[in-house]
Length: 247
Length: 345
Image (cartoon, rainbow over all chains, first blue to last red):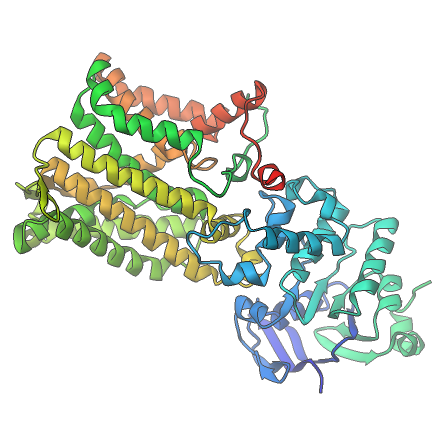
């Protein structure tokens, strides 16, 4: 049984149909890619899958539970985490606090009015270990907004990993990154794939084809095809639209 | 200084752990010695009561305004609800200090909870406008419900009940006794709010101020936390209102008027509530000093205070606390960052 499944998702904004009968199935432990041209509906699809927008139709199930229409905080608490295409961090605070805020141990005591935050060594150590996974532990005590762009991208991923999710949605993680930083990110995701199920929207086809086990191609708000990277490169439609050009 | 980078609450971090900091020590010492130094500097005892009550109001207001970043321009309403509840309890139920204060807090909590239920899904300009609208509703009710509130005259002759602590009974009829009582309440409120600001709830409030969407996607029920912050802030305003009614021995609609709500915003901004826990305290003190000292020189003191507000917003929008932080940074006396402190620990 798939860990995460969406069936016949529909979403429209006014008269504009953005998603039309989107179906996705993500196996546990896999990296599932989503690709498509600009305006195809990829990010809207992520927004619907992670609760930011309620779908107009269709169902979403996670580990057998129906999560359709649930709010983002409810979905996050079930073990579904995400990063954003446009950077979404707690910029005024230090890097480590971005991660601490997302730790389940902290979140579960989140309404405690008196417990100390930074005096809790276990919490700080755990946050440091999450930052270590993305190579940011040496920046832990710096302000988030002061980090260079590439490291802010890495922090986005650290915040997504901190809640110990079962599935992570990464929305264009290479957006704005140079070649070196993109390669470093590819290496990081290769390391993470053994521990997390990952769903990845990506424009960088080389990046996506080297990482994904399966890829769904979205166009005009519909999944036009889904297959392994190797098979997709043989697909005439994908080849014709230049989406499969990885060389 | 105008070219210096804007600082935030996270740039003047609290150290976490114990609230026994130098700033807290100075604040509590100033409170504990006010009955001696106030007359010595040419001021009067009642001013101490007034300042202490507004400090309670301002600290509670800044939980909402500075920490969670929700801009309420109708918070005078909850000060007024507390004042009326205290007065009505004394006049209609029983002359009791604790009963009156519980009634004041409870009434403003209920009013705040009700309003928060309608506005917590918003932020920004719509949130601010809705707080004004609800504030005006409370003010209008205070004027029109004549049989309950006394209309435009308000409730007059509210007694100052004795402080009963078991077998001990202390009269609060004179201003010095009342000051001691209000000062103790203020000390407790300051300690409690300081601790809250550095506890998980306070950190989550700050996270919501910075990025509501991210807070939601890491698992926080943002609506609920905004609701809690507004309701708690209204409850503290109600406590201040109850004390205000006791100090003034009356409760009247003017307390709930729009300009009172604007005043608390101005005090908190000028003091630096957006960047420091202590900002509201500086702002309230500055306002009352301006009123009594500049007001002793010229009737147009509010014009000068307003001008100072404009200059402050233009030059250093972080307020007095921001100015102090910049000066301390330049002379190498800025407090150690919270993070560094923790690492060393």
